[in-house]
Amino acid sequence: MAALQSTAITPEEHTKRMALQAKRLREIVITLILTPIALIWIYPFLWMVSASFKTNNEIFRSGTSLIPDQFTFENFQRAWVEANISQYFLNTALIAIGSVMLVVMTTSMMGYALGRYSFPGKRIVIGIFIATVFLPKGYTIIPIFELISNLELDGSLLGVILAQSGGANVIFILLFMGYFSQLPKELEEAAIVDGAGFLRVFFQIMLPLSKPIIATVVIMQFIASWNDFLLPLVLTLARPELRTLSVGMYAFRGEYFTDWSGMAAAATIAIIPVILLFLVMQRYFIEGIAGAVKS
Image (cartoon, rainbow, N blue to C red; front, side, top):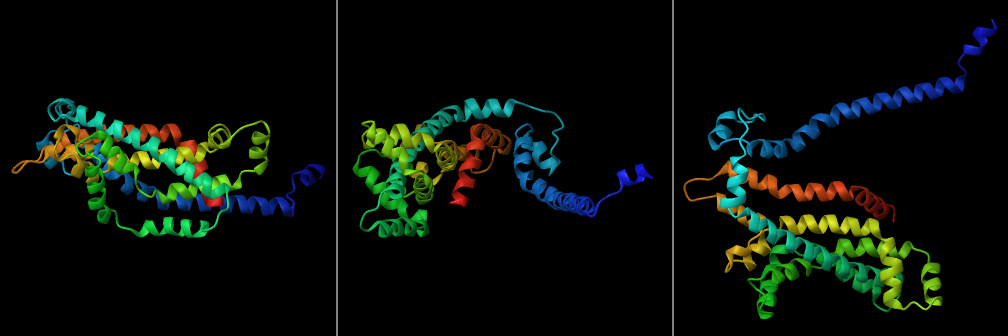
C-alpha cells in the first residue's frame, strides 16, 4: 500500500506531463512541416554544387539528380585558371574587405553620435536616413558613377570600394544607434574622469562593447559587397582585369554556348568565403540580431 502511494501521480505532475507531451507533439508537427520546406529551400544550392562535379552533357541528361555519375574536378581547374576566376576572386576579396572596414567605421561613428548625444534636429536627421531606405538602388548608379569619375577613380578597385561603401546604410546605423543608446552612461563618465577624450572613449571603451553589432554589419556588408553586380560592372567596363566574381561569371556565357558546369564550379568557389564567414561569426550575428529586435 505504501509502495502504491509513493508511485501515485499528483495532479501537478499530471499537468506537467501533459504539457510536456503537448510540447513534444507540437515540435514533431513543426518539424514535419518545416523539413520539406527546408529541403526545397536548399535544393538549388545543392544542385549547383552537384552540377560543378558534372560535365555539361550530364547536367542536361541527369536533370534534377544530385548525384553525379562520375565526379570530375576539371570544372574547378578550368574556372580557376582559364576563366580567370583566381584574379576575380582576389579583386572581390579586396573590395569586400575594404568596403566592410569603411562601412563599420562610418556607421558605428554615426550610430554612436545618434545613440549617445542629443542635438537639435536629431529626429529630422534620423528621418532623412530612414527615407533613403525607399530609394531604389538603380536610380543612384548614375550620380555614383559621375562622382567616382570626377574623383578619377573609375576603373580602379578603390573606386569600387568607395562606391559600395558610400550608401546610407541606414539599417547598420540604426543597429549601432539602438545598441549604444542602451549602454550605461557610467562607462563614459568613468573614462572621462580617467582623462580619456572623445575618440579614446569611442575606440577603446564603446566600440569594443558592440561586437555583436559589428559582427552583424560585417556579415551583411560582406555578403552585399561580395554579391554586388551592378556597381562593379559599370565601374570596371574599361578594365576587365578588375572584374569581380559576380561580373566574371558572364565569361562562361557565350553567344552560342554556355558553360554551365564551369559556371557552377565558379559559383561554388565564390560561395565558400561567405559560408565560412557566417560559420565563424554566427554566434555574434545571432546576438546582434536578438539585441536589435529587443531594442
